[in-house]
Image 1 (cartoon, rainbow, N blue to C red):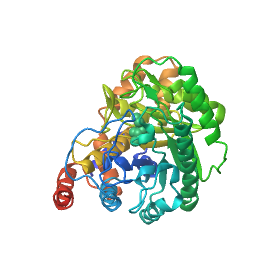
Image 2 (image 1 turned 90 degrees about the vertical axis):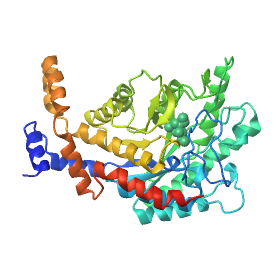
Image 3 (image 1 turned 180 degrees about the vertical axis):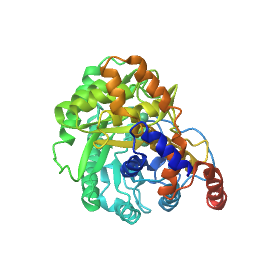
Image 4 (image 1 turned 45 degrees about the vertical axis):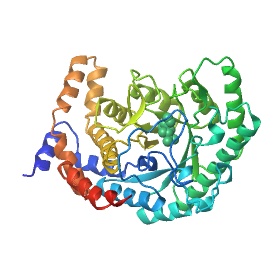
Length: 416
Ligand SMILES: C[C@H](O)[C@H](O)[C@@H](O)C(=O)CO
Ligand SMILES: [Mn+2]
């Protein structure tokens, strides 16, 4: 009997059918962020770099993608090493702009046609993000909440164009494009007129959302945040702000695991949000002391998020995006590790004997609930994961270091 067959029998004793779990797992889409490949630089200008905006990429590992072709090449490598269904989450700054500079308030559909075509060829639908940072018009810390009307209008125009582009992408690919809006607006020091800034942001959003797009083409998500580098004292688009805005305006919340106090249990927020909202967008990340965007690992926090999605029965209407960027290590390895870690967490959660756990809980047998969860942690999960890799024609864990090393030597080291 194979290792998998043995493991399957063990899970059967808990009423879990591993074959149907593996089928279910393949169908869950993970939206892979394009920005791990070039440290959030984008391709608006040669050698563009992430600047300002309360986020930071640290490290200078060689081989980063310097143009769209290199990024696609890297992504194709990544997708060959991770199994299951995926989407690509594209930032507006990654368009194909040619040799002329195209400012953010001038972007149009045509700059993203190449990505849509590539996505269709790869069987990978796209999601989209407005880029409200790394730009002189964001240098004073405010974009959509700016008190400078010229700056505010510039970013409103960007946001409107992003929505139009997202709807166009969704229509072309036959799958709704999730548009995430994250703005860096906030202040390093004490801010007196918080109410005023938030009122301006609300006004900007109201105008941006005046145009309705069909749900089958695009959906809007708003990303909340507690603090950022350079916005330690005040973030306009806080959790409470967007919770209220989203609820009253029928928008989706984006919950980034790095955007809360590091001691907060992000997983606990999910059932509270999903009870009232049909959909949610997650930015799965691994904050270390701050919103550091470390590579996601198969750790307790990720497991707890995956468990909540499965236990709440809301996996179908949850959009799982990844948001990490580590410039200090092999970027392909970073991507692959993070994507696979999220997939492992989902598998781990899907293998739970939920009905039995609930039965114990409802009968007041707290010890049995705890004991059953402890048993789960020592079941042969690795055998099921290996089988998933086999069924999706992707490498086993033990093969990754060599494969990624090979790509590094053959491709990344050739980049000047
Ligand atoms: C690049 C992304 O837009 C960014 O990471 C955003 O999602 C965020 O989390 C900012 O802290
Ligand atoms: Mn994020």
